[in-house]
Structures are given as structure tokens and as C-alpha cells.
Image (tube, rainbow, N blue to C red; front, top):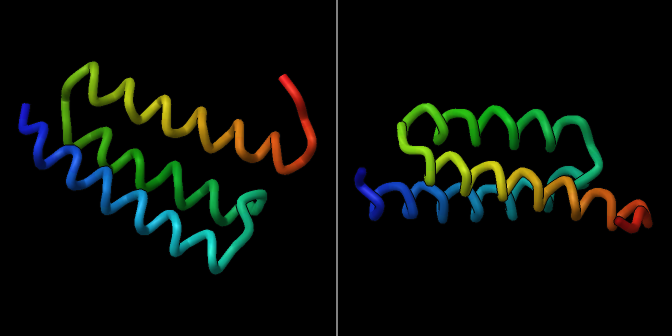
Length: 74
């Protein structure tokens, strides 16, 4: 597993996510379609369980931020 490449890809994704969020709101379907499709590319690129778990955590965090923006408390 090339962790350096993985985390570089993850950093690029996070930067792209920040750019995307300047263009569309977090609660938009367009953002979540983009997030899921691009995280899936990284998921398929790195066949390692821990790498996949990091991606699940990122998606869960995105969902938490969405709920928080809507005033939902867990």
C-alpha cells in the first residue's frame, strides 16, 4: 500500500471539496453526487481496508456537517 500516494490523493480531494463548496451548498444534491463519485474513485484505486475506512469516515463527517447545518442534533 502506497500510503504517501493515498494521502496525497486525499489532500487533493479535500482541496477540491473546499472549491466545490464555494460553488454549491453542502446540502445540494450536486455536492453529494460529486463527493460520492470522487471518493469512489479513490476507494477503487486503493484496495486496502484501512484506506477504505478513512473514506467512510470522511463521508460520515460530510453527513454530520449536513445534519448540523440543518440543525439536527445526534
